[in-house]
Image (cartoon, rainbow, N blue to C red; front, side):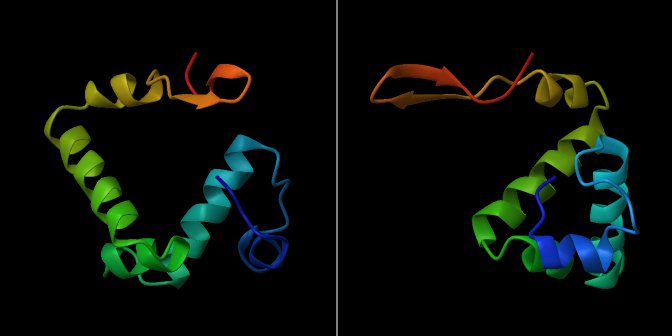
Length: 93
């Protein structure tokens, strides 16, 4: 999870932004405050104002709901970018 300092101060529940559990709880608090679960689309858009982002998150959520094993595929998904110094892995185990 990524937070701007003011957002973390408002929604981080006094936790440590570097702690994964605290960050997930802060994100849940933020999403609830911005419309979830009543309107996930609105809440996600408040977090990242990009329709492509909102659509992607909702698509991934539907796939995980349909087949919970998809979570593990997303978790292990490795993302690479090409930099001036060569290929660099950003995510994944």
